[in-house]
Image 1 (cartoon, rainbow, N blue to C red):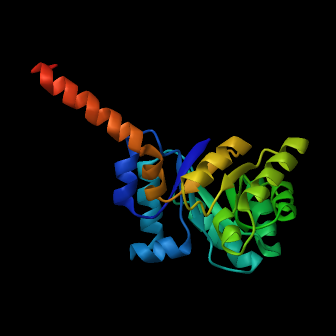
Image 2: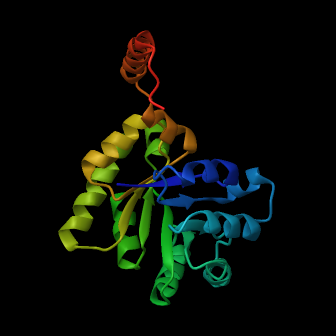
Image 3: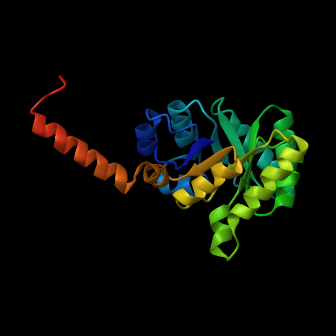
Length: 217
């Protein structure tokens, strides 16, 4: 499963770039606003940090303006993936941009039927939001299971990009279900590394090594 980092914080991204744990980046208007910088500048800098897809989201709600924004965003760098909402206008925009060779990430997906429509519109990625479904009493991973199955039934090329990941259990469940991508905040990626038994084992190894009085170098 590929890991995308869900942030517009370039300092965090540069720190993760050398770990092999970052296959791409996702942003949204809220994350860009949090950065306090001009959107085009942030996206351009992120695209210089990773060769993977960098999702940049349109903010218009009508098809014509979405299309203009999408074409503007994709011109920032070759690895920009234009992000559009799962609305009728968003699907129309997805179809046009996809036909033009642009990677499109269809976001705010909350049902398998919506995911089916996005695949038919040519989306490169579909972003079902598992955490937000969990928040209202549904099991977000049920949606991932349905979408993975449907896409497999028909050999759709659209990749399932699990979004709104809140904790490591979401990552594990998504990987077991065969999702192609998980996008998560840097903190969740760092949490995947940690385990108390790893820390305990390392502490014991180092204590035993110290007793030998040796140095490897």
